[in-house]
Amino acid sequence: MNNENKKFLLGHMKTIKGVNSCASIPNSADNRVILLFTDISGNIVDELGKKLIKRWMKITNDFRSWYRSQVNFKLGKTLPISVQTDTAVLCILCLNNNVMDLPALKDGMILAGRWTSENKYNVHLNKINSNWLEIESMLTEYFVKSDVNVTIYENT
Image (cartoon, rainbow, N blue to C red; front, side):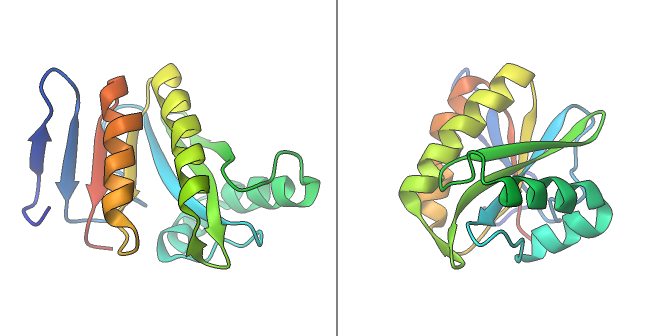
């Protein structure tokens, strides 16, 4: 998606929209969840993660607590963190030494899709370079087809 605010309509389903901005400040007036791909090492290292933890310290505290407890802390699992009344960050544990683990990503996206649909959130995430075609396919399969809007931020 190269054009700002370009929408792809998928029949009766919701949309995937691209904007030139960063997902750390979601462009939405309704309930929103920011997807954050996290590493099994227990560190949040990507640029989006750094911006989010700078804005909301709760993310660092909750993620570290999850890592220390090791309860359900394995590839493919998710952790939703409410940071405002209308905003959550959903950590998807799908990186192994900063390398995307596609089966773990799929498992995490399935869980995230259910959670966002059940809780009536719209999804926001930064476009990443690695494995983007697979990620975009999963966004359509697990979010858009479940009536969840997705906004992809391209200028981080």
